[in-house]
Image 1: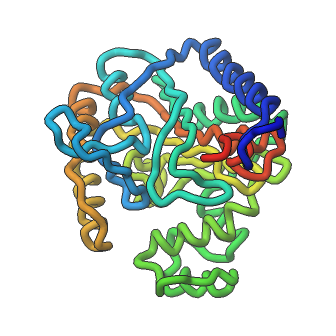
Image 2: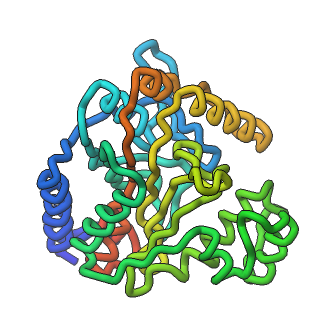
Length: 317
C-alpha cells in the first residue's frame, strides 16, 4: 500500500490496473460498434422485490422523491425505442442493503443491449468479454433445472414447496427470521448457498432457463413456458452477470409489474408506482434484443486476484 493511503484503499498500482481494464472493456464494445451512453442516475424505484432502491428526497424535477438507479434499464430502453442502436452503460449503480465481501451499496455496473440477439448469442459475447479479463477458460452451460438436480437433488420446476424447504436443511443452510416467504425465496437461498458456489471453478459457467416467476423482464421460453430466457454467469462461485432475451410486450410487462407490486405488498415491502418510462418505451417499440447487467467490480476482483470488492473499489467500496 502506498504511504499515507487510507486503510483498505486500493494502492496506486491497483488504481492503474483497474483503469486499464475499464479501457479494455470499452474497446471490446467499441470494436463491436456498441455505443456508450450516459442515462440519468436518478429515476423511478426498482420494481423487483429482491432489490431495495435508495431514495433521494426532493431530487425529482417536481421536487418529489427520486431514486438512485439500481439499473439504467428504463432509460436505456427508451433510447432503444428512439432508435439508438446497440448501446452500453459503464458506471455506478446503487442498491440498498448491500454490504459485505462481495456486495456494496454503490457498485460499478456494465449494462448493454444487442439488437437482434437472443440470450444464447449474448452469452457468447459475455463469455468473450469475461475471458478478456480473467483469461481463457472452458465455457460450460447448465440449465437451471439441471444444476439444481445435480447439486441439490431437487427439481426446482416440479417439486413441491416442502421438498424444496427440506433441501435447505439437507444443505445445512441456516434460516434467520423464520421459514422463507415463498417458493422463489427458497430457490434463491439454494442458488446462493448451494448451487452458485459450486459453479465456474476453472470455467465460465452459464445457468439459464430460470423459473418464469424470477424473470419479470425476460421472455418466456416457448419450449417450456415454466421457464424464462434468463441467464446468469458464474466464475469461481460468484455470480458475475444477469441477462435476458428482453420482453418487449408492453401489456405483458405491465401485468408483470402489477404482480410484483402485489408481491411487495404481501411481503410488507414499500409498493412503488409502475415504471411508466419503461412501459412507454415498450409501447413505442423496443426492438427485439437481449440485454445483460454485469458486476464489473466482481469481475475486476477476480482478474486482479483480489479477495474482496474493497480491494478494487477503495476504502469506501
